[in-house]
Amino acid sequence: QKEVEQNSGPLSVPEGAIASLNCTYSDRGSQSFFWYRQYSGKSPELIMFIYSNGDKEDGRFTAQLNKASQYVSLLIRDSQPSDSATYLCAVNNQAGTALIFGKGTTLSVSS
Amino acid sequence: GEEVAQTPKHLVRGEGQKAKLYCAPIKGHSYVFWYQQVLKNEFKFLISFQNENVFDETGMPKERFSAKCLPNSPCSLEIQATKLEDSAVYFCASSQLKGNTEAFFGQGTRLTVV
Image 1 (cartoon, each protein chain N blue to C red):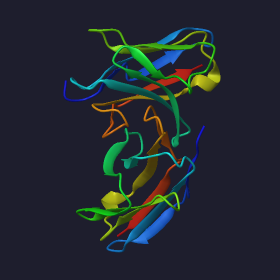
Image 2: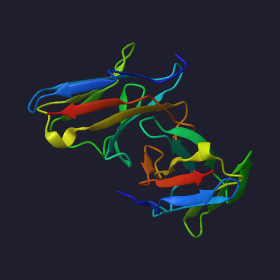
Image 3: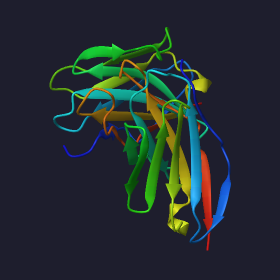
C-alpha cells in the first residue's frame, strides 16, 4: 500500500503563532489531497482539500501542494487553543478508490 | 440524510463472536468507504463501494471480514469470529464523486472485543 508520512509531533505553538504541518506521499499518481482535523474521541472533520500545485487559502488555513516533491503542507495562522487536535493528511490513490491517511500530527496551542 | 449515520456507537463482543456494523451514507452520495482506526491515529483503509458494487477491497483482511452495500439498506461491515486485535473504532465515510472529493465521516462504531 502506498505511504503517507507525517511527523507525529506533538507540535507545540503559542497562541497567535503560525503552525506548520507537513506531509509527504509516495504515490506519484495521486491527484487529490486532504487535511482532516480530529479531536480526541471524535470523527475526522475535513478542513481543506487541494488538487493543484501551489497554495490554497481558506480563512486562517493555507494548504500548499508540490507534486514534484510529493509534499503537501497545512499552515494555520493565528493559532488558537481550539485548534489543538490531531491533523490527518490524506491522499487519494491513483485510481481514486481509496483515501490513504497518514498517522496524524498532534498540535497543541497554548494560551 | 444530511450526515453519515453509523450504528451502533459502541459494540462489545466476546472473542469468537460475530460483530456487525452499519452505515447509512449521506443521501445522494454514491461512494462509501470503511476505515479501521486502532490506537487513536492509525487509519487503515478497508473497503470502498460505488453504490452496491465493491470499488476497492485491497484493505480487507482475507478472512473473517466482509462488507455489503445493498440498495435501500444501510451498508454493513461484518466480522466473523472476532479477535482481540479487531478492537478499534470503525469509521464509515461517504462522498458524492469519485476521488474521495469531500468525503464526510460518520461518528464511528467503537468495537471492543473481550
